[in-house]
Image 1 (cartoon, rainbow, N blue to C red):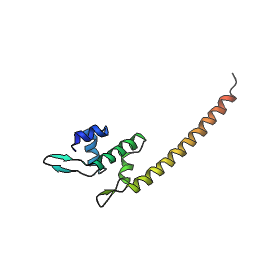
Image 2 (cartoon, rainbow, N blue to C red):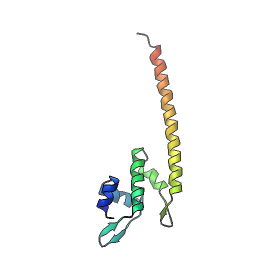
Image 3 (cartoon, rainbow, N blue to C red):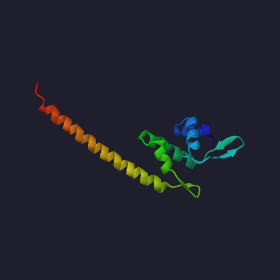
Image 4 (cartoon, one colour):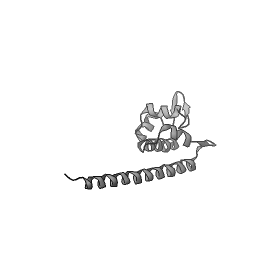
Length: 112
């Protein structure tokens, strides 16, 4: 699959895909002449990157998480990272709920 098709399927720009490749987040695909040929597994990883970024995960964090073993993505490591990231979000939600409760208490104490 050529980069234009990958771009359409993932919603990522061609520039972004090449950037992720340069950063090592996806493996450099094989070439057919001067064209990169992407595989279906590249789509999965690019969608994961896109979704993780939308959640607030940085590329630096992803660089430490997306690793390859014998040419295959270590999905176990990614799954562990996502579990830990989820827990961090749960803690943030709890903290925000506590702050909202404090604001509500302050609001109730104000008399006009």
